[in-house]
Length: 136
Image 1 (tube, helix red, strand yellow):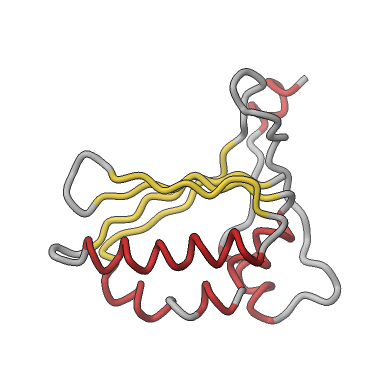
Image 2: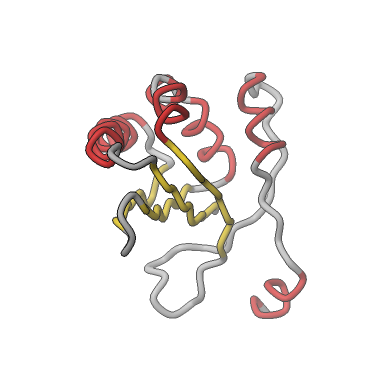
């Protein structure tokens, strides 16, 4: 599995544009990506602040998502309105994770596109030692 938490801060006045683009991305992700398990977006308490919780069958499904045409279609548009962004891989706890398994690193498959390889290098899953201890 691969589960991540993402923080997005959009530039002032761009909230509607961001939410409109995100609605299309959400729709297309659910329509075309069977490896997507969870794809949730939230408004934060500060204007222009958003959070996302995404979970995929595995890292390969995440790479497919990141490299999809519908994701790439918004690349430049998102870049023009996003002020700050980070992604953190998270490890679901047994209680309340609704069947999600731990996030585990994987190498890209042999047939990975150059974009998938680039995404795997820029956003690798890193499993801290303390996660491993808690898992057992």
